[in-house]
Image (cartoon, rainbow, N blue to C red; front, side, top):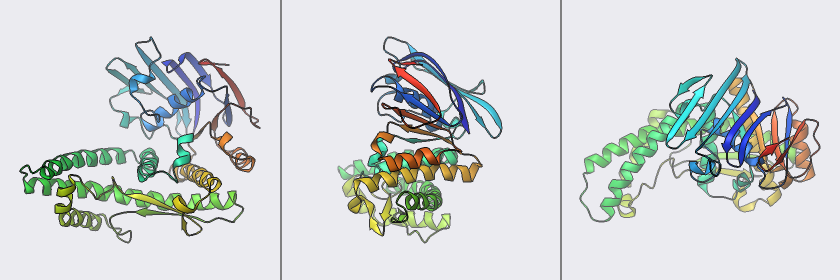
Length: 361
């Protein structure tokens, strides 16, 4: 898969731009706050369905404008396609190949991309939420139906938490109602659990290989899904019943806490390097290698499932890597399309696009 072009109007600091990309390496070159990341953000919006940066969607609109419009043209194994997203006031317009679509979830899974940005460097040392977010986004691009299941899970969780919160304050609650929400929660949780374990198993195979290559065979990387349900359970019905049992047996504890204490919204991924918890025992260099390995592995899983690589977006992170790791990226991407943002000119044989004040040359 390659992105052929990107167009933006009144998006962040970009008034109007049209970019065409080389099939291999593309470098967006410029000082900080000139618009490099804004272009990457606009592209990745079509892979994730929303911005990867925190803030309100209104922040995406250029100052003084009424709304924005972004679109991409990309090529996959089936041919050339287009995606478009526009926001004007409360109106949202989404199109795929010129036809209107109503939900962001309908867009996800069409254009696939792997993003590596500075925030990802905290993936190892950060909290469980960051690792869950990483795995949720990666799975969603491969299995768009996962988004719907996870959304249903969050709605059920919200309703169950509302009852538990009321109970913690001494208000009356219907135990039958909370048991019904526990049943729904267990149903959705079982689907999420199965999909996460399957994906992490695939991811580990490639991440282990990349980590070994980066460290010249000195470091072994392993991944384990830390679930409230035993990893040995593989049948979805078994997993569902286990979640239901956990929620039922711990109801009194959760009533006191006023919140659901068990389930996929609290689970984590254990990252180990040479048999030790990387969150505690890894150096800064090892953490960078781990995240790089995970991002490269994400692309390999996508290739395994769809027989083509996604687009790789490296936003201002190569400067965070030493020369050896930079060379590993640049030398290893010869059969993949990569878009890099940087303040410094890098050793690259691809296209260089200079960025200044939201303009691209």
